[in-house]
Length: 345
Image (cartoon, rainbow, N blue to C red; front, side, top):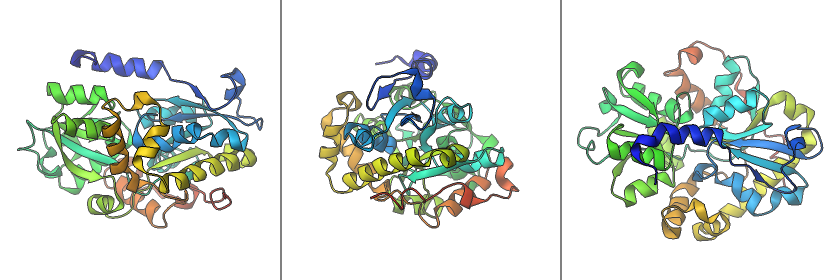
């Protein structure tokens, strides 16, 4: 277990030491080329997070291999870092939050969600037991230090929205980049944050260890609607639009594989899903890991299709606090495509 003093060092290590996982074939330099040779690099904003479970599960089920596409999965501790890798051309795709496609469009980058894994954020705002008495809603965020995976990440976006929606300005509280998993838990334990936004299996471990309580639960469509006013499409496979248009055969294979996984998830129990995942993902034990999957499963779609009113919810949420987007004109239809999931069998 990492000590509290090593939080920043742990994050730096996680960023530098990317875990490379190859779906089939070797981890050759050609995997970075992104040519129509069936080799694709995908960066995931935390491979062990349940919200991004379809990425590794698709590999575990052998669906990439079945489609004849060689996928190298890489991991970063926060989605914003994964986005940087996409923009710089280091990877061809990202499994991360859809909201980054809107943020990037304003910055002149055309990126689109190709497969929409979810229609809810899967995120949870937790508060430490010590601070639970003074933080009973986002109205109490003022003056507090709140954990997010990274500055500019989707957890940062959602935390700011919740604050602004309840009358707290973004400069009235302090977001602290603490990653997820053990680094988040350590920050909560030592009091360097009073609360924060994270996902399973981190949430399950915090509750199980009685280190904190759930304040806002957005793991279900109902929870998303209550907190954000509608469906909030989050976890997705997004890619540069130019790359998608130039590699449609490969993108279709990826869509086929991911949609097959989403359908598989909808017909299997949390225990069956957990059994397919790497053993080291269940840090808190098999039963707790299965429970964290059960709590998060409602966020996932069964077909990879973008929910009809989802993009508008995301736009409204981002414009509530983001000065770059507030007065910008967004073309939401360019931030996602259903072309490939509609053809997936």
